[in-house]
Length: 301
Figure 1: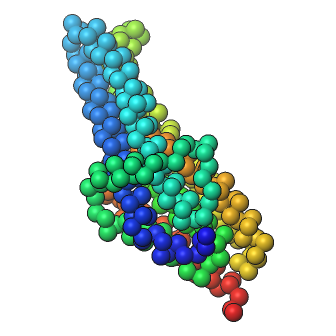
Figure 2: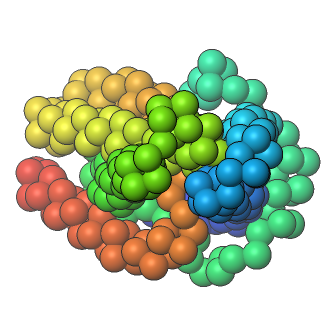
Figure 3: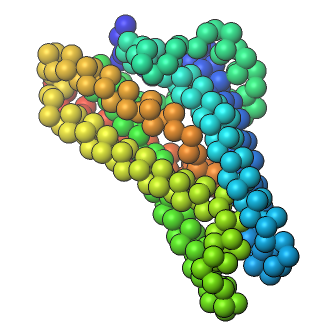
Protein backbone atom coordinates (compact mmCIF):
# COMPACT_ATOMS: atom_id res chain seq x y z
CA UNK A 1 0.00 0.00 0.00
CA UNK A 2 1.32 3.42 -0.93
CA UNK A 3 1.37 5.50 2.22
CA UNK A 4 1.78 8.71 0.26
CA UNK A 5 -1.94 8.81 -0.62
CA UNK A 6 -2.86 9.45 3.01
CA UNK A 7 -4.25 12.83 1.97
CA UNK A 8 -6.96 11.16 -0.10
CA UNK A 9 -7.68 8.03 1.95
CA UNK A 10 -8.13 9.89 5.24
CA UNK A 11 -11.27 11.50 3.82
CA UNK A 12 -12.81 8.26 2.54
CA UNK A 13 -16.00 7.03 4.27
CA UNK A 14 -14.23 4.15 6.03
CA UNK A 15 -11.65 6.48 7.57
CA UNK A 16 -14.27 9.01 8.69
CA UNK A 17 -16.31 6.13 10.13
CA UNK A 18 -13.39 5.02 12.31
CA UNK A 19 -12.79 8.56 13.55
CA UNK A 20 -16.46 8.90 14.47
CA UNK A 21 -16.43 5.57 16.29
CA UNK A 22 -13.31 6.54 18.24
CA UNK A 23 -14.80 9.93 19.13
CA UNK A 24 -18.01 8.33 20.40
CA UNK A 25 -16.09 5.91 22.64
CA UNK A 26 -14.01 8.78 24.03
CA UNK A 27 -17.22 10.67 24.82
CA UNK A 28 -18.42 7.72 26.89
CA UNK A 29 -15.07 7.66 28.69
CA UNK A 30 -15.43 11.35 29.49
CA UNK A 31 -18.91 10.72 30.86
CA UNK A 32 -17.46 8.15 33.21
CA UNK A 33 -14.85 10.69 34.25
CA UNK A 34 -17.63 13.22 34.81
CA UNK A 35 -19.19 10.77 37.26
CA UNK A 36 -15.82 10.47 39.02
CA UNK A 37 -15.62 14.27 39.15
CA UNK A 38 -19.04 14.41 40.85
CA UNK A 39 -17.80 11.91 43.46
CA UNK A 40 -14.67 14.03 43.88
CA UNK A 41 -16.64 17.22 44.48
CA UNK A 42 -18.98 15.40 46.88
CA UNK A 43 -15.95 14.24 48.88
CA UNK A 44 -14.81 17.84 49.32
CA UNK A 45 -18.26 18.71 50.62
CA UNK A 46 -17.98 15.74 52.98
CA UNK A 47 -14.59 16.97 54.23
CA UNK A 48 -15.97 20.45 54.92
CA UNK A 49 -18.96 18.90 56.69
CA UNK A 50 -16.72 16.75 58.87
CA UNK A 51 -14.60 19.80 59.67
CA UNK A 52 -17.55 21.71 61.12
CA UNK A 53 -19.79 18.88 62.40
CA UNK A 54 -18.05 16.58 64.85
CA UNK A 55 -21.20 14.44 65.12
CA UNK A 56 -20.95 13.52 61.42
CA UNK A 57 -17.24 12.65 61.33
CA UNK A 58 -17.75 8.88 61.22
CA UNK A 59 -20.36 9.10 58.46
CA UNK A 60 -18.21 11.40 56.36
CA UNK A 61 -15.15 9.19 56.87
CA UNK A 62 -17.09 6.14 55.68
CA UNK A 63 -18.34 8.19 52.73
CA UNK A 64 -14.75 9.08 51.88
CA UNK A 65 -13.65 5.44 51.82
CA UNK A 66 -16.72 4.46 49.78
CA UNK A 67 -16.13 7.30 47.33
CA UNK A 68 -12.51 6.27 46.80
CA UNK A 69 -13.57 2.70 46.01
CA UNK A 70 -16.38 3.93 43.75
CA UNK A 71 -14.01 6.14 41.79
CA UNK A 72 -11.57 3.27 41.32
CA UNK A 73 -14.31 0.92 40.14
CA UNK A 74 -15.56 3.52 37.65
CA UNK A 75 -12.00 3.99 36.38
CA UNK A 76 -11.31 0.30 35.91
CA UNK A 77 -14.63 -0.86 34.49
CA UNK A 78 -15.89 2.19 32.59
CA UNK A 79 -13.24 4.80 31.77
CA UNK A 80 -10.47 2.33 30.93
CA UNK A 81 -12.80 0.12 28.91
CA UNK A 82 -14.14 2.90 26.71
CA UNK A 83 -10.79 4.66 26.34
CA UNK A 84 -9.22 1.41 25.20
CA UNK A 85 -12.05 0.88 22.72
CA UNK A 86 -11.43 4.33 21.27
CA UNK A 87 -7.70 3.61 21.02
CA UNK A 88 -8.37 0.45 19.01
CA UNK A 89 -10.50 2.36 16.50
CA UNK A 90 -7.79 5.02 16.14
CA UNK A 91 -5.18 2.30 15.75
CA UNK A 92 -7.30 0.67 13.04
CA UNK A 93 -7.38 3.97 11.18
CA UNK A 94 -3.66 4.65 11.56
CA UNK A 95 -2.49 1.20 10.52
CA UNK A 96 -4.74 1.36 7.47
CA UNK A 97 -3.58 4.83 6.44
CA UNK A 98 0.10 4.28 7.21
CA UNK A 99 0.39 0.78 5.80
CA UNK A 100 1.54 -0.63 9.16
CA UNK A 101 0.87 -4.17 10.34
CA UNK A 102 -1.57 -4.62 13.21
CA UNK A 103 0.22 -5.33 16.48
CA UNK A 104 -1.84 -7.98 18.34
CA UNK A 105 -0.15 -7.13 21.65
CA UNK A 106 -2.12 -3.88 21.67
CA UNK A 107 -5.41 -5.75 21.56
CA UNK A 108 -7.71 -7.50 19.16
CA UNK A 109 -8.73 -5.52 16.10
CA UNK A 110 -12.38 -4.41 16.49
CA UNK A 111 -15.06 -6.17 14.48
CA UNK A 112 -17.01 -4.39 11.77
CA UNK A 113 -20.10 -4.62 13.97
CA UNK A 114 -18.24 -2.79 16.74
CA UNK A 115 -17.37 0.04 14.41
CA UNK A 116 -21.00 0.41 13.27
CA UNK A 117 -22.22 0.26 16.86
CA UNK A 118 -19.99 3.14 17.98
CA UNK A 119 -20.34 5.16 14.80
CA UNK A 120 -24.10 5.34 15.38
CA UNK A 121 -23.40 6.90 18.77
CA UNK A 122 -21.35 9.74 17.31
CA UNK A 123 -23.08 13.07 17.88
CA UNK A 124 -20.35 15.56 16.96
CA UNK A 125 -19.52 17.57 13.86
CA UNK A 126 -18.51 15.17 11.09
CA UNK A 127 -16.87 17.98 9.11
CA UNK A 128 -14.16 18.22 11.79
CA UNK A 129 -13.02 14.74 10.85
CA UNK A 130 -12.00 15.83 7.36
CA UNK A 131 -8.26 16.24 6.68
CA UNK A 132 -7.43 14.67 10.02
CA UNK A 133 -3.73 14.57 9.24
CA UNK A 134 -1.36 17.17 7.88
CA UNK A 135 -0.78 17.47 4.14
CA UNK A 136 2.08 15.09 3.27
CA UNK A 137 1.96 15.47 -0.51
CA UNK A 138 5.31 14.95 -2.19
CA UNK A 139 6.95 13.13 0.71
CA UNK A 140 8.20 9.53 0.58
CA UNK A 141 6.33 6.96 2.74
CA UNK A 142 8.60 6.91 5.78
CA UNK A 143 8.75 10.67 6.19
CA UNK A 144 5.01 10.98 5.49
CA UNK A 145 4.05 8.53 8.25
CA UNK A 146 6.43 10.04 10.81
CA UNK A 147 5.14 13.52 10.08
CA UNK A 148 1.56 12.37 10.73
CA UNK A 149 2.68 10.73 13.97
CA UNK A 150 4.45 13.91 15.02
CA UNK A 151 1.24 15.88 14.57
CA UNK A 152 -0.63 13.27 16.64
CA UNK A 153 1.87 13.56 19.46
CA UNK A 154 2.32 17.29 19.58
CA UNK A 155 -1.12 18.82 19.70
CA UNK A 156 -2.15 17.94 23.27
CA UNK A 157 1.20 17.47 25.04
CA UNK A 158 1.30 21.06 26.30
CA UNK A 159 -2.39 20.97 27.23
CA UNK A 160 -1.80 17.87 29.35
CA UNK A 161 1.20 19.45 31.06
CA UNK A 162 -0.79 22.58 31.95
CA UNK A 163 -3.71 20.55 33.30
CA UNK A 164 -1.45 18.13 35.16
CA UNK A 165 0.40 20.98 36.84
CA UNK A 166 -2.89 22.64 37.77
CA UNK A 167 -4.12 19.43 39.39
CA UNK A 168 -0.92 19.06 41.40
CA UNK A 169 -1.23 22.63 42.65
CA UNK A 170 -4.86 21.95 43.60
CA UNK A 171 -3.83 18.86 45.57
CA UNK A 172 -1.26 20.89 47.50
CA UNK A 173 -3.86 23.59 48.16
CA UNK A 174 -6.34 21.04 49.56
CA UNK A 175 -3.75 19.59 51.92
CA UNK A 176 -2.66 23.05 53.07
CA UNK A 177 -6.31 24.02 53.61
CA UNK A 178 -6.80 20.98 55.81
CA UNK A 179 -3.69 21.84 57.82
CA UNK A 180 -4.87 25.41 58.29
CA UNK A 181 -8.31 24.29 59.42
CA UNK A 182 -6.72 21.78 61.79
CA UNK A 183 -4.38 24.41 63.21
CA UNK A 184 -7.23 26.89 63.71
CA UNK A 185 -9.48 24.26 65.32
CA UNK A 186 -6.61 22.82 67.39
CA UNK A 187 -7.06 19.32 65.94
CA UNK A 188 -4.86 16.43 66.90
CA UNK A 189 -3.20 14.42 64.12
CA UNK A 190 -5.86 11.70 64.20
CA UNK A 191 -8.56 14.36 63.89
CA UNK A 192 -6.84 15.80 60.82
CA UNK A 193 -6.89 12.33 59.30
CA UNK A 194 -10.51 11.39 60.06
CA UNK A 195 -12.04 14.87 59.68
CA UNK A 196 -10.23 15.95 56.53
CA UNK A 197 -7.91 13.50 54.80
CA UNK A 198 -10.24 10.48 54.87
CA UNK A 199 -13.44 12.31 53.82
CA UNK A 200 -11.46 14.11 51.08
CA UNK A 201 -9.65 10.92 49.99
CA UNK A 202 -11.62 10.50 46.71
CA UNK A 203 -10.64 14.03 45.69
CA UNK A 204 -7.01 13.74 46.78
CA UNK A 205 -6.46 10.34 45.15
CA UNK A 206 -8.21 11.37 41.93
CA UNK A 207 -6.45 14.73 41.66
CA UNK A 208 -2.95 13.52 42.56
CA UNK A 209 -3.15 10.44 40.35
CA UNK A 210 -4.57 12.34 37.37
CA UNK A 211 -2.05 15.15 37.74
CA UNK A 212 0.90 12.75 37.78
CA UNK A 213 -0.48 10.77 34.83
CA UNK A 214 -1.00 13.90 32.72
CA UNK A 215 2.53 15.10 33.41
CA UNK A 216 3.98 11.68 32.63
CA UNK A 217 2.06 11.38 29.36
CA UNK A 218 3.15 14.88 28.35
CA UNK A 219 6.79 14.00 29.08
CA UNK A 220 6.56 10.75 27.11
CA UNK A 221 4.97 12.55 24.16
CA UNK A 222 7.73 15.16 24.18
CA UNK A 223 10.30 12.36 24.17
CA UNK A 224 8.57 10.68 21.23
CA UNK A 225 8.41 13.97 19.33
CA UNK A 226 12.16 14.37 19.78
CA UNK A 227 12.72 10.84 18.48
CA UNK A 228 10.52 11.50 15.45
CA UNK A 229 12.28 14.76 14.65
CA UNK A 230 15.68 13.09 14.98
CA UNK A 231 14.60 10.46 12.47
CA UNK A 232 13.21 13.08 10.09
CA UNK A 233 16.52 14.93 10.22
CA UNK A 234 18.83 11.92 10.07
CA UNK A 235 17.34 10.05 7.12
CA UNK A 236 17.62 11.78 3.72
CA UNK A 237 14.36 12.18 1.86
CA UNK A 238 15.92 10.68 -1.25
CA UNK A 239 17.10 7.50 0.52
CA UNK A 240 15.04 4.48 -0.56
CA UNK A 241 16.76 2.26 2.00
CA UNK A 242 16.14 4.91 4.64
CA UNK A 243 12.40 4.72 3.99
CA UNK A 244 12.34 1.08 5.10
CA UNK A 245 14.16 2.05 8.28
CA UNK A 246 11.72 4.88 8.96
CA UNK A 247 8.68 2.66 8.49
CA UNK A 248 10.16 0.09 10.89
CA UNK A 249 10.72 2.80 13.48
CA UNK A 250 7.27 4.20 12.78
CA UNK A 251 5.76 0.90 13.92
CA UNK A 252 7.65 1.18 17.23
CA UNK A 253 6.48 4.76 17.72
CA UNK A 254 2.93 3.75 16.83
CA UNK A 255 3.01 1.11 19.57
CA UNK A 256 4.05 3.69 22.15
CA UNK A 257 1.46 6.16 20.88
CA UNK A 258 -1.30 3.55 21.10
CA UNK A 259 -0.41 2.71 24.69
CA UNK A 260 -0.53 6.39 25.61
CA UNK A 261 -3.96 6.66 23.97
CA UNK A 262 -5.16 3.75 26.08
CA UNK A 263 -4.47 5.72 29.28
CA UNK A 264 -7.76 6.52 30.97
CA UNK A 265 -6.65 10.02 31.97
CA UNK A 266 -8.45 12.56 29.80
CA UNK A 267 -8.41 16.36 29.78
CA UNK A 268 -11.87 17.66 30.87
CA UNK A 269 -14.25 18.28 28.00
CA UNK A 270 -14.75 21.98 28.81
CA UNK A 271 -11.00 22.64 28.77
CA UNK A 272 -10.46 20.40 25.75
CA UNK A 273 -13.14 22.20 23.72
CA UNK A 274 -11.98 25.65 24.79
CA UNK A 275 -8.31 25.20 23.88
CA UNK A 276 -8.54 22.49 21.21
CA UNK A 277 -8.61 24.80 18.21
CA UNK A 278 -5.56 26.78 19.32
CA UNK A 279 -3.46 23.68 20.01
CA UNK A 280 -4.60 21.97 16.81
CA UNK A 281 -3.60 25.05 14.83
CA UNK A 282 -0.19 25.13 16.51
CA UNK A 283 0.36 21.42 15.83
CA UNK A 284 -0.73 21.83 12.22
CA UNK A 285 1.61 24.81 11.76
CA UNK A 286 4.53 22.86 13.19
CA UNK A 287 3.78 19.90 10.93
CA UNK A 288 3.47 22.16 7.90
CA UNK A 289 6.84 23.74 8.63
CA UNK A 290 8.38 20.28 8.74
CA UNK A 291 6.58 19.35 5.52
CA UNK A 292 7.92 22.39 3.70
CA UNK A 293 11.40 21.81 5.08
CA UNK A 294 11.44 18.17 3.93
CA UNK A 295 10.11 19.12 0.51
CA UNK A 296 13.06 21.45 0.05
CA UNK A 297 15.30 18.42 0.54
CA UNK A 298 13.44 16.38 -2.07
CA UNK A 299 15.48 16.17 -5.29
CA UNK A 300 13.72 17.50 -8.36
CA UNK A 301 12.72 14.81 -10.85
